[in-house]
Image 1: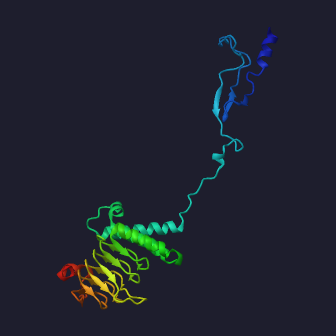
Image 2: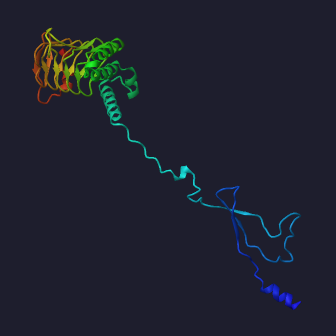
Image 3: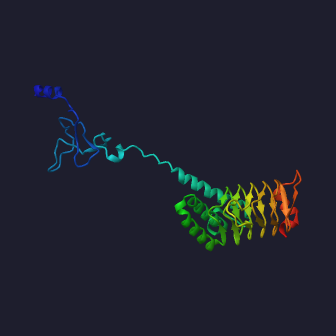
Length: 278
């Protein structure tokens, strides 16, 4: 009896942990906890069919190895492709035109409203496409067809050959005519019924040139190869057949111009001089 007790005390009470990778559950590691070599007298008896050398399995999450990682994990993070240069240019130009229209139209409530219902913007955008086509000899006929379609839809006739600057806006955009050789600067605003026409049938430059920040009142006619200077104001129903210097106001039939005061804002002059609207 003493020898048996000595042998039982010298035996190791635990055995190394047995580990194996489960094939049925990838990514999980099955660990067998250390078991006592000899059970205590009060230990739970194994049930019928139960392995007395095992205890309930403990599952420990395991980080998958690179070889077992899915392609989604191994794929490098995609970087957002940069927008094409032409798309950025078109988007910026459209937003710039919309902002100019919203700024100059007191009835505008949002960008979306102006983009949907403003015929002046539609005529301008149609002209920009037609003008690009006009630069190519083979596309001049389709450009004229497009300009006629825009004219039918908006009531504004802009020849594809006309050159129009940035932030151009036509308020109400009805019965507006802009000739082929017209040159228009930046920040120009026209009202309904404006004609930028010619006075001769000869080829060449026969339409007016408008500088920057020019405002033309409703029904005004600017005829011939003349120049309207920067920050000039053309009164409603005026007929302009001579050059208008910078910072001048032109009214009447035929139009007579006068210089603005040094402290007078060209835009405010439209409200202080009633002749601009007659």
